[in-house]
Image 1 (cartoon, rainbow, N blue to C red):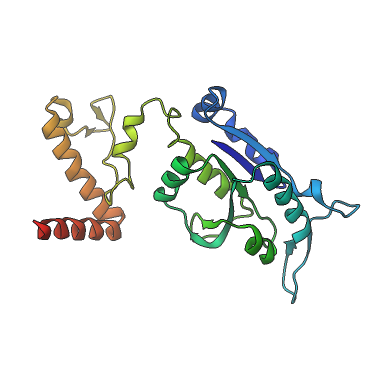
Image 2: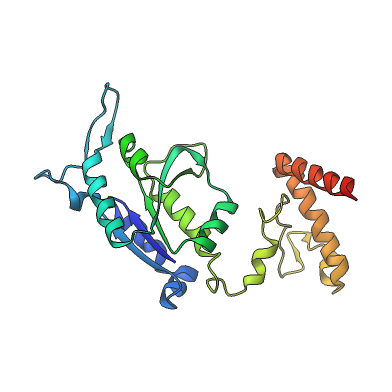
Length: 238
């Protein structure tokens, strides 16, 4: 899997890949990361990449020409690249999207906006998909790009040390993942549920299911309702 980040601020992003799981994946050749700066494609002698918003308003907007030339350059080198723009008005990025990209794409391009955003014509011309990571505003698209790249990376075969851990994670079904515990057995008078320590795997799995249901019902009642509806539909079939 290759990730290309189109950004004005490469130093904000590259450090994320210099430690831990993603660093090891790059060293193994499972992932590669590169960067493209729109400022390198500007025709302005001052390397200007932004201008005032048409119609007025606060803030500046990223101009179309530098981004257009940057993406033309990228597509000429990698025609199959999937281009994703990050913006608060995009559709929510979900685990299903991460799985889809990890299994179907070899080259992901994330375009990170800055200032008051990107000239809309560039999004219309170049976006294969447009995503948001939540209903809030950030100073730029670099963090959403890293979030999505991280979510995709860990699903690439071989990136995680134990691929079996993926099957029980939150968002693989409607239920959230059950709570996790480790030693010591008691901490600040709070104990690990005793059933987890007895080695009976069928009872452990049943307990984890109950805990997952309780956690989902408390934190994400919307997903809990979907889960109960799915179970009801499955029972009705039989």
